[in-house]
Image 1 (cartoon, protein in one colour):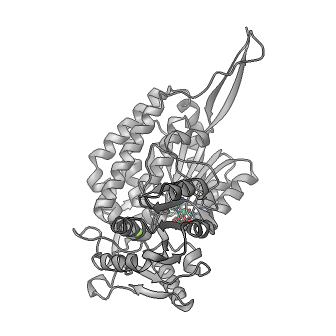
Image 2 (cartoon, helix red, strand yellow):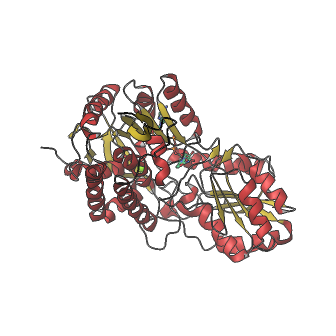
Image 3 (tube, rainbow, N blue to C red):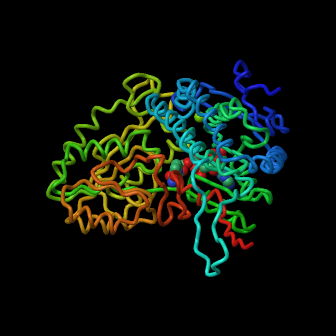
Length: 492
Ligand code: NAP
Ligand code: MG
């Protein structure tokens, strides 16, 4: 019998899940996952696994995939429905764990967990939808059609910023199309990930179909990317790591999918509803402490309304409460880890040095109650020029760069002057502006009169340029990565 990882909650140690069993790493080592709001609080201990643990997980996945792929899509879907129900029963507990482990506010954590449940149900349904097309053959007596086959074993490497939604939006399509999975979560949020895996275990998923190995990125993540028996690798995280993962996969001919950084712009035209634009800028840029890949970072405002916009923005920023994500009324929690805090502070310093004007925030909060957490004030820079580092590099924190522009044409040009192209938004009522934006903006997600963040699980998601490997996740687009097309030519 398997013992659920949470049975160890007394000791707060969470185990790997390999071949249907919860097991400790062969290393005997664990690592603490701490609460970024209160660094002395340990949320749980997770396994510091080695290549040997990973090899066991991949071997289990490889063996289990043979039977899993033979099930009907509907039968595989049943397991996903059951996992969704298990997660729904534990929604509050999982969301609270997420808040404690990475700091986002409880309402956001609950929203994300609810999204994870919806994603599971969406892909459960996909098990009964079409997977091919009939194509007229030039031979009148033949039938030609396409079908889809799974890749085999899929490695999932996930970041800490959406600890429930991202692993699920990768694992659910991988599983429904007949792949077996090895999940390597971010070590920062491995306790939350263990609880998701428990839900799959509770659903009765056959042993080996889903395996879970925690450990450092350089050992388990890199190990997955290089493993000869891992046929596909889906990664979300930073550009530097993503490129290494992609190169390792490419070197051995494995399929790979990378979703990486962003430097997402919001464009505000002279005719925009400024109150709505301010709300969207703050919500898109500051919620989740700016740690969304789709977070607003550059704010390009037409000069005739620049001052009015800036005034309204600063007035609204004053009302944002920084604090513990579990406390009611908190608007933004801490950065997810100390490294992230240091990065944000260093960019703030860089912004000052480069001559941007600090308009709001810019340091750690003074409240002594927040001293033990990785908190930073929401921050706005004024008079940012497009060459400054804070206008070019991904900060991944609650920092907005205001950039005045002369026209919307110039706004789109500057918005496109970035190595990234994940999401972008425009506020305007002018149909000409809107059409130019839709046509000319180089981003995988363009949003009109709505914030840059915001992803719907039934629609394709992914970036252009350096933001992605140009594949798309979520919705029906997910089938492209998690399967191969087989063209069938059939003649009696
Ligand atoms: P990260 O440092 O790149 O880590 C992502 C994952 O890769 C983690 O599981 C990490 O493990 C693992 N990893 C680290 N080194 C590795 C290596 N050498 N080989 C293989 N895997 C390795 O990114 P993060 O700091 O967690 O997340 C923030 C970044 O993710 C931002 O750049 C953000 O824009 C991006 N992001 C993008 C999207 C999107 O859809 N485009 C969504 C969310 C986040 P450990 O952490 O355990 O070491
Ligand atoms: Mg943590």
